[in-house]
Image: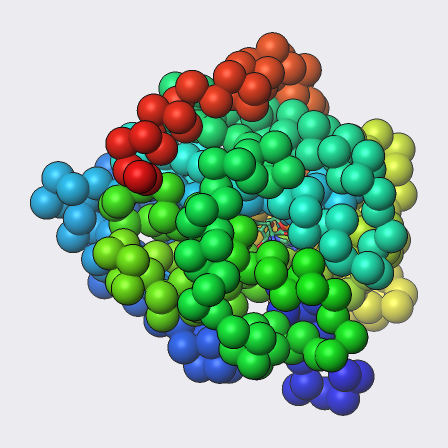
Length: 382
Ligand code: TYM
């Protein structure tokens, strides 16, 4: 990395400045065209900021999902989280979008907490106890998003493995080492747990005999590529997916926020003081002095606080347009954009964390009872 134009995206790392057009070509995904967006929004009955702003930008078979919906066959949603530590604002965004999809299309949602994956990732150095603890903590954040408890199942691989294992084995038997090596870049030193793990992440796409739609950032797409090559041999649908971009790190526009670089990210449990400090240190598109800034204007296209407002935090298109104009012309200073973002982020987190506390009780129902999943499962899996 390091050289201009070079970047790398895998389910475990994002490095460099991501060229999303190139990534779509490399991964073989389709762009979310204006026509498809229109159809999607029409069927959803309302627009969503993440669609309108192009943050969800790519897909696989979204058109087929919409055909199924119109034909009354329906579809289900699947997303997940690797419980390696506290969640960041980047991690939670796909969950808010998934909830919106659940509400608009009245779907079941399955949420996989991959405690196994995060234990196996050697660079993380986490114990079984650590990943269990983070599963619970992260599940509280996910529950705070407000999914419909009657249509949502959150589970941890280490707990739910019994129900998944027969299907996991069927998947594992169809995927050899050279295939996962090519897709994920494994090598001879990769532990055998990591080599087997993709079968778990794929398995959830077979929880129902309907088409599965996966909302996630594009880093998770390599799993879906394998799934799509084997699904029909089991009599299931190839999974569909809708991919978002990465909320850029505060430290600069390239890569993704990373738990190993706390300054790059804002965690959901961070207090206002620390949020303010991080945002005020964020990578800015402003000029070095106020005089120069007034004269030359700022560059919103590289300014991370502006990018965050555009990505998710300023819902009002007209306000965003005004901020862009004022900033580019030099009338608005970097500090002022930062102040707007601090207010938006703290407001968002305040609401999120209130719901997180309310979710504790609901969560134990969703997580431990497993009633809904058992019913769904028995209808679909032998
Ligand atoms: P994890 O925990 O790395 O990420 C959780 C979700 O957040 C997305 N994501 C981001 N989205 C926007 N901006 C960012 N900066 C950003 N960073 C991460 C991820 O794409 C993901 O949607 N192996 C998975 C867990 C998993 C999963 C799934 C995820 C299991 N099954 C199905 C999505 C769909 C993981 O470790 O995710």
